[in-house]
Image 1 (cartoon, rainbow, N blue to C red):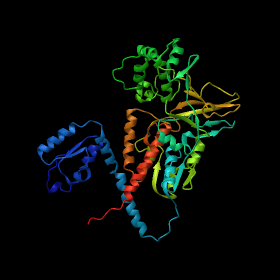
Image 2: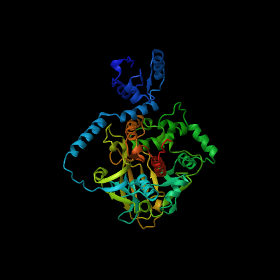
Image 3: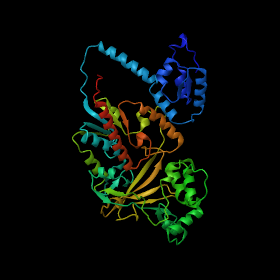
Image 4: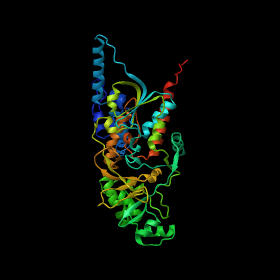
Length: 488
């Protein structure tokens, strides 16, 4: 934008600057006042006062990567300058003036809280407990579901068996801080999770280990070296590992990929592994030992009395008020709060402005059987694509409950229903980044948790994220409250 510097351009408003930035293009401009004032600090915008500087700035702009921090920064900047925000500010000011001329009427009394937390799962409960117990805040926690605990909610079914209503939740972590924090609210039952996969007429350990290979192929591999050599003989060379298929084929070969991963992944995600990011299958290890534990974390345990009792203890504080079975938008009009912590879907918060973020959901069929045990382990996977369920869970293995009957859950992935798993594809992450830019520009709101950050986290990771968020909130509050010393 080589505007001449003269009286005609002294007060020009160069609208092409945000238009080019919105199109993903860097900008080089002569020193127009409004370009410098609104965009001069952005990495995507260069200011050049003469011809040599203009040429140099153009060359630097052409050298920028097509994607990167400069584009993310530009998106966040543009999110603060929309016509919607300008119109809202104008309408608010007009409304204020009009109301000032009317007869005064006292506003209805609104309940006062320091923080409103949307969502009573791990992220919301941890922040509510910390804000109330550690910062002496008055906190209101709301959830559209009629219970606390989010997807970790457990309850006794009609038979009296403790089940996980939204599928199995197995706690494991390498973080002593997270484990110690949760230990304030529950005692633990030692539990190491084991999973079997149903392949033909066999139940074999999953993740794949030496026992799996011996049972599946009728081998007698005796040590790690022999198992590693067998896997290496089947692994295929993949020059550029980009997809979930690439990860598995490069590690164990196409036969094991077809047996354990392809069908299961297609059911779980509704996509072929060749269409999914490599992180999906990279989370599942392959072992050469006979270790059949699903997790190898330092701390592996289940809350002795269940997750719901743990959440109840966490939220049992006089500074915390619960309002369940309600939409937060219905609550916000009748309360007065300083801050909002939002743990729900980030696209929903912004009324799906750019469209819905894609998720996979789950459907469950819960059954009770008149036997003491239904299957040998808590979870049996069904990788065969012709079998509709991905897994069956028997909860007594997890809880240690003694009962004459047993309850199980069949798990069916679905494209519709409550959001469970963000779908890891580049276009979905790009859509999330647009919402993230809006979130960064949103005053008075903190976004935390799986749905608010569009990432799949284990339970311990959500707890760790919430604790870190609380520490940042405290640090920011301390900075804001520090008195500014007058210059002498």
